[in-house]
Length: 140
Image 1 (cartoon, one colour):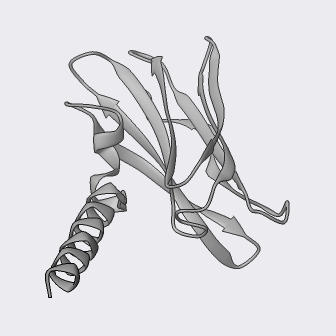
Image 2 (image 1 turned 45 degrees about the vertical axis):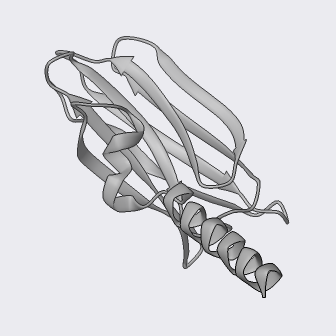
């Protein structure tokens, strides 16, 4: 009886911690920190399938933009991601990493400038999904 109780408690603990660890699109702005709000987003497509969403966020008090990608396909599986943020007339910032749930964040000071952003998710077979915005926008 004691063994069953401990086993059930262990499963309950694992289940409870598993739900907390999985990021969701609803809190995508939280990946960049306090004060960041979502200003643009783009689904990441592999042909007709959506593998995730890339989010552009902005903090008006610091003038910084931030980009992160949240996976909706291959969630919990290590996949390669790349996130890039480019400031018009400035630099391009990027991060490539292997992740289970989300990639980034990547930050850039973009006060008074326009930005463009992109992200890539590479699946286990080498197929890729891409998203972002290739034109200048969110000029501030």
